[in-house]
Amino acid sequence: MLTLYDAARCPYCARVRIVLAEKDVEFEAVEIDLSDRPAWIYDKNATGRVPVVEEDGWVLPESAVIMEYLEERYPEPALLAADPADRALARLWIFRHDDFTRPYYSLRRGEDGAAERLDAELAKLDAALAVRPWLGGRDYGLADIAYVPWLLRARDLLGVQIEGNVAEWLGRMLERPAVAAEAQVIAAL
View 1 (spheres, helix red, strand yellow):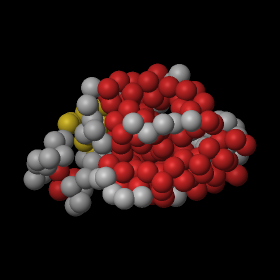
View 2: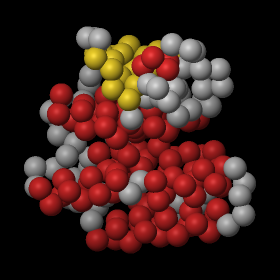
View 3: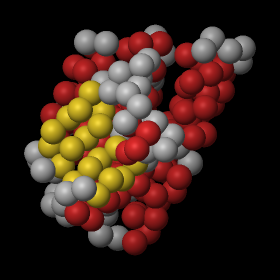
View 4: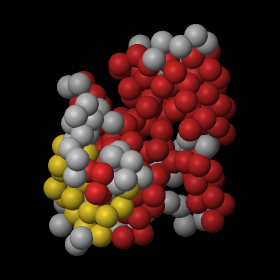
């Protein structure tokens, strides 16, 4: 059975939880206290960060890599499009994800100008969602999953107003049981 070294408050872990739920993969979750990480987690990931998945003694860290691994290991339902252009677009959004998370974390730390930088990133998402229903193209998938944990946390924990196309997209995301379950995790934080 697959083991997920997890932390409820971690949006990177949320990505993996959502993919696992979408693919209906059974797993054992091992909660890691991020304020007091056990020494053994560094044997699983030299950085001590989560998420980490382990299966049959094989260990893999890093949420974006884990999402792709799960897509290949459990191909149904597909979360990357069959069309190579849409797959590339999804990967591009995931690759550029740090452009969004940097101002998110700056806002969490209360840094000057962070709200404006996050608004600029939300505007980029809004523009993309004006021309297609999902970040990766015509269908819901990994690119959407890559962003939604931060959007939910920005809205629910930081009071960021989500508007326009992003709000509509988030509404569609919350119709998915896996994403709705993540919203419940956030509500319990």
